[in-house]
Structures are given as structure tokens and as C-alpha cells.
Image 1 (spheres, helix red, strand yellow):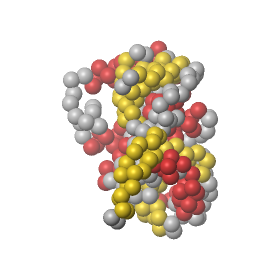
Image 2 (image 1 turned 90 degrees about the horizontal axis):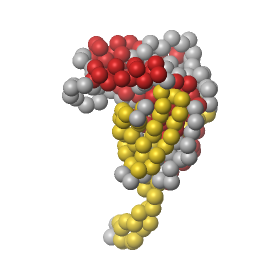
Image 3 (image 1 turned 90 degrees about the vertical axis):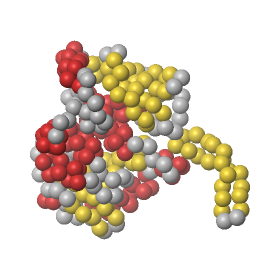
Image 4 (image 1 turned 180 degrees about the vertical axis):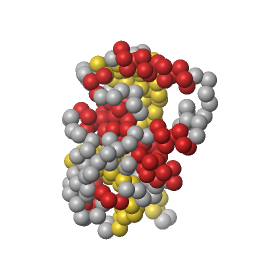
Length: 271
């Protein structure tokens, strides 16, 4: 898969502001996270436009393609090019003929439907069935979650600069941080992480994901789609996330705070 150069738009910029501390007001030059429209274009057809941090966009495009089942493996994307436009960024990907046909048929079934993020889903039962089933006997070592959380705090470079992004971390089962991706969108951060893992040819069964956000349905669905067995989050899950995690075989952990955490599904993987 061929990669082109990263666009010149940066992940953060400097903006003037008035800083108020009590009654003292000073002029300040603030570091602010950037957020731009990123269009994911397959074989010349725009499939989705996401607001994302313009960094690690190759990882983002590949991870989105895998987690949304546009492709089944990275080799089905034959070319990837990032094109900076006046009003955003386009990521052009060339799919294999077989995958292009599957995507075309999927888009045809979507035509004429209305709705939001769950387009094409007619019921919660159908939604649960769409999630892949994860089979894994892996288990986290005792103390892995607090170790991972402590290590992640130091690894959030863009967050420390801006205070405005989420992080998705890939952790080994002992709690060591191996990869981190950040984005203004929590789903984007996870897609970037999935893409980075795929690019490095790492197995999705060799660790777990730690998110700095709440755990929504989309987070669980994306993890299940690629075979990640454990998803942990520093904040709360949603009820739909718990239901889908239970059905899809994903261990879902919320409220990871130091030595405390709450396991909502498949607890045998967390001690």
C-alpha cells in the first residue's frame, strides 16, 4: 500500500485569547487543538466526512476502513493518498475490485434512508447482531489497569499541549503502553490506533484498549469488528455499549480510576 506525504495542516495551532485569573486579565497566546473535515474517499466516491485532528491520517483511514468493515484486511487497500483541499482534507483510497463491489452494494442498500449515526439499522436486535463475536481466552494481569492508566497520563502529548483531545492506548496484558493515538473525537482516536496496529502488523489479540473517554456503542463495535477482546475506559459506558459488549464477547470495563474499576461484561478476563 503506497502512502503519500502528510498534509501541512498541523494537529494544533496558536491563537490569541484573554486569560482571566480572578480580576486580572492578560493577553495570552494559547495552544489549541485543530479540527478539520476529513473526507474518506474510496475509488473516487466519498463515503464519510469526519471532523478529526489532522494527524496520523493514514492510520485513521486504515483503522476506519477495518473497524467499519469496509475492508477485511489492510491488503485490500491498494493505494492511499492524502490530498489537502481549501476546506478540509481528502483521503483517497483505492480498493480491490471485490471490496469495491461490496461497498457499492452496501451503499445501494443505504440509499433513501434517513437517520443519524446508525443508518441502515432498523432495531437494537439487528444492531447487536451486526457486532462481530470475539473469541479470546486472554486475561489481564493483576494491576494492569492502574499501571496502564498511570502510563497513559504521561503519554498524552497533544492533550498536555491543548487539553482538548481523547487518547486511545494499546496496552499489553501487564499494563504496559505500546501505542497511543490522540484525536478530538474518541472514535477517531480508536480508529487511528487500529490503523497503527494494522500497519505494524500487530495482532489484535495481543493486548487491550484503554480509552480516556466514555465507552459508547461505537467504541465497542469497532473493537469487536477487528477482534479486540478488552476495552477499558476512564469514564462510564452506555447501556447500549454494555449490551453489545455482552453479545459480542467483549470485556467492557468502565470507571478506570487508580485501583478502582467496574467490569460490565465477560469479567473472566479481568482480575
